[in-house]
Length: 388
Image (cartoon, rainbow, N blue to C red; front, side):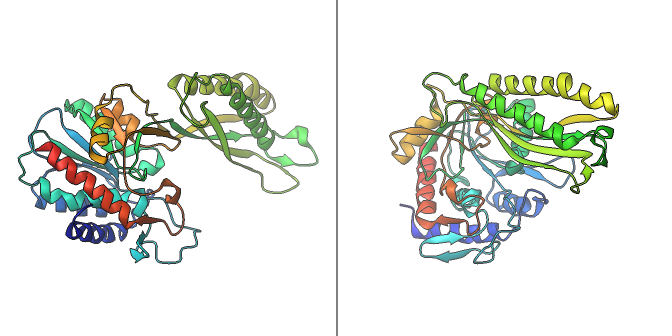
């Protein structure tokens, strides 16, 4: 178990981090500067990597020697909104009660970031045998946008770390794979008119229903594509219809409709299969019928986010390292998405292990158990010994 002083320091840092309302829709620069300043003061080589708009930034910090072969500790700085959630306490102020730390992001995943920061003083000036990198990204919650940019930056710069440990909440268990997570919004534009003369308009809501029905058909077809002995639950690629909206009144032909949907591919081939089939259905079946009545009618599928899947590998040095550090004797796969697949694409060996229960993520009264934070600190202390 971690020493009490380090645990108190981690809780104090988590208090600071929770106080930054770093919701994905807003800038993360205040929390990024806070982290960069602390790491710089500890002697890390820190690079702030802004996004094109200049309102978001990744942090890439390094302790120890320069060069390839290092270990990346990966976390994200953004959190999901609290709007319309009924919190018992202020979500942006840390509250400790009954061995639990309440606040937005405590579990997902500022607790891991706080544990890193509380341990970073051990890496300052230590005789590390290989580089230790901290990758703290923006916009994980809206499609892993920051991590995608960071991976491109690493690739273009030629730096090749050997492995990444991603600290998403797993209850400190080891995760070695997850499905991808692709989110789309399809917008159908028709022609408004009076409901008494349906043939004089193009009902976007009706065509949205036909589009959605085709997605449901594809969802069933995907079951037959499930790999033998698949480890995911369910083992096939899934499709979910999250929202269908259109229309303004009972007696008005809707001129616009939207469908929010997501795809959780087991493999890139399944994603290609779905997108090819639904785009062809839209272009070859629905759109000609819509434009026969209104040439300006349209169907547009917009990518909200495409999170790369994380494939289990028979040989995985990151998994093996976490096994040694935590004493776990097995690794699992999960349904939720992370930045792990992006790091794996470099390529790198990757595994996920972090404090907290994913069941708490995104909910009101989100919390992290103090015991989980302490277990994470112990794991990081073991990593320090491993690097020396």
